[in-house]
View 1 (cartoon, rainbow, N blue to C red):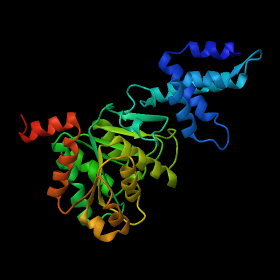
View 2 (view 1 turned 90 degrees about the horizontal axis):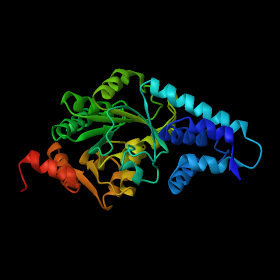
View 3 (view 1 turned 45 degrees about the horizontal axis):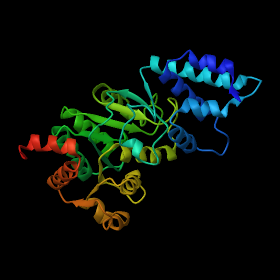
View 4 (view 1 turned 90 degrees about the vertical axis):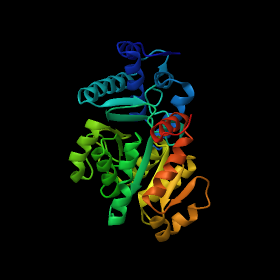
Length: 316
């Protein structure tokens, strides 16, 4: 059996990276009904090549498959249009795909990136409720302390704690990364459109959805999983019983990532109390406690630990 000569001729006209990207996009778009993107991700990781998976799926003996040619051609055109828009397309096998994120089972097959992409980014997630209290806003300023330590502040660009964390990091002159629950061409909520532009200009915005994807309830849980995977740890400064921050804390524990809960969160939420006996879950009663716990967490990461020691004037 062999692959359609016409389809191969089209693919061979692209760079190796573009071939891989086009094949991945085509595989995801042509996915049989009832199959998830996770199936494609697993096959690509197992095979080591999206293009090889695509070739296997479209191998035939005599008659070229016109849909396969059209699908690959459409993917190539879209990739070019996304590049022209200033967005970087990252496939899970790419060397510049975030290294920590690839470790979790919810790692998306691709990401769209706008801004300063760093493969090994020492990031801490600061998350919380959209309807944020004054106490939550003050706690979110822990982001400024992280920025002072040259630690990337990671959040979801939502209203409330997320926006406060991004803004505090930017005001401190630090780096911040936003992982959003829509396509990268969208801004949600609309009130954060200007903040999203600022994050792109001085940090990074990532999306795991097609560029024009609107906000959907399940997108935000998927986004929380990616935030947990991207970061070294998660700080939950305020959250309710049904908030996305609760879900992220649970997923971070599953991912083996440390979780720091404020005493405010623990006092008000049964889910937080239930997490206290899990390994890697800590409680902080003040901003000083949060930073002390963060320093302990970061010291476990060799590269970041060396940086912390240098900044604090300790160590050899």
